[in-house]
Amino acid sequence: MILIGTIFMDRITKAARLMIVSDLDHTMVDHHDPENMSLLRFNALWESNYRHDSLLVFSTGRSPTLYKQLRKEKPMLTPDITIMSVGTEITYGSSMLPDDGWVKILNQKWDRNIVIEETSKFPELTLQAETEQRPHKVSFYVDKTKAQVVMKELSSRLEKRGLDVKLIYSGGMDLDVLPQGAGKGQALSYLLNKLKTEGTLPVNTLACGDSGNDAELFSIPDVYGVMVSNAQEELLQWHAENAKGNPNIIHAKERCAAGIIEAIGHFNLGSNTSPRDVADFVECKLDHVNPGYEVVKFYLFYERWRRGEAANCETYIASLKASCDPTATFVFPTGVEKTLHECIYAMKGCYGDQKGKQFRVWVDRVLSTPTGSNTWLVKFDKWELSGDERCCCVTTAKINAKGSGGASDGYTWVSVQQKWLEGYEKKDTSIWLF
Image (cartoon, rainbow, N blue to C red; front, side, top):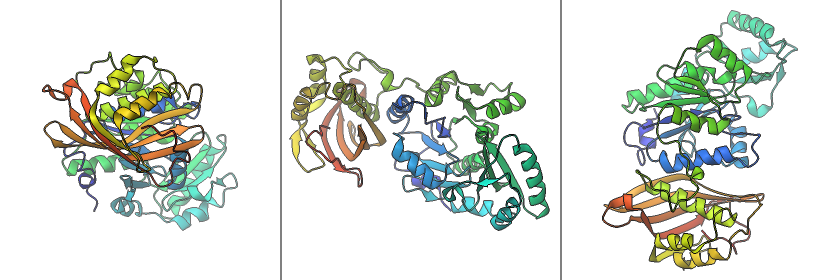
């Protein structure tokens, strides 16, 4: 049996401060936002304020194949736990280690062959792509005008064959046939019970969704819920019929990931000011800072500088230099070593070279490990999108707290070392500054 605590013990040694459980399509990911700004805002908020002591869970109807495809298309973070195929598959960590205990539960009163046999008798049902057919999920398309009649008859037939199944209709066309014990809600309940047994039940849990297959997430006791502003009619109808008077479930004013950020603030679950919403880092003073925030801030300023969105003034360059030890070194993925001050000087010549272009920078999997009273080893993945090219470096930085006041006085970069993430090397390394 997998113990969740042993997987994340390098980062979380007690109950998570916050666990966000979010659907992907049209919730975390806005397919109508070509710049992916709401997603990037959430990314910056999570890595700077929550990654070190909280859990991020993606709960999607997508199969592993389509989930991995989405990760290649969008600037998504790496979740701690992934629930896929409408709650029928649970995996842990970046290696996506499957939960065998969940599989055993789903096998009860389930026979996929019988499901295939009975559904083949309905001409109204069209099988979805092979990638979407999973061991505990059989998926179809059905016209919404025929959906209710088909579901009622199919449910009756499968029950007579001795199966205990659940039919979930979402998106106005998707019909999933699952074991009765499956679904996004049951998968979340299973996770919460598992964490409670291990003595690490999250302090707060926030469920986020937009469609019918997310309704179960909002039925779990003691869980906050947000329906993003663009939630579909089927979910809003469920809410009106089942949870209208529940103050722990809100319909956000903002779309997708921006709605999730809104909910964090509404329920007072923690900071909901993304570093991407801070106009001037030099003027901004925070009560609580951590190495993760320092990393996010540094690379966000780098993005703004290259895009010509930060003022081209010596004050910013001086501030950057002041945040680096005079002898601080930077080892490029190519193996070339320079001082950080040399890199900052080189950056001066690249001001605005990406203005008006598709250029974004974000960090993922920020892990800070104390190595002394005022020293941290910070590991993270640094991503850079330039046009159609996505590059990633696995990065290790050594950061010290400034002065005797500890981290509240800010940080000093001592060293940075990068190596390419396999498959995401940059073709032209002549302009790879940080």
